[in-house]
Length: 119
Image 1: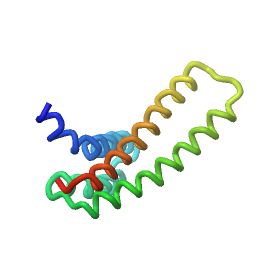
Image 2 (image 1 turned 180 degrees about the vertical axis):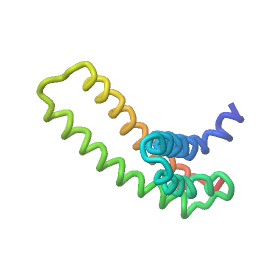
Image 3 (image 1 turned 45 degrees about the vertical axis):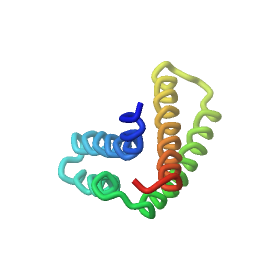
């Protein structure tokens, strides 16, 4: 249990690094070399893994709370306006909802970590 709590503080950063890596691979398949600037989004998260900073952690958390709140509103407006639901649209709604919820939870987790303790 001690090991789990020791490494659990890194979960939000690893999650966002994984999302950025996935986003990069998808865009790189379609656009080629123009996808490399996407990797710059991973720098703050990698920096938090290497040299944690309470201020950067709080800033990342607040930023992603705002982005996730916007995503939640966009997701809800999309769900409420769809009339005819095919199976592929239902699958997209489920995956999109899980993605939006996971982003929000990870951002809250980062803020909790920054308020709880310095790594």
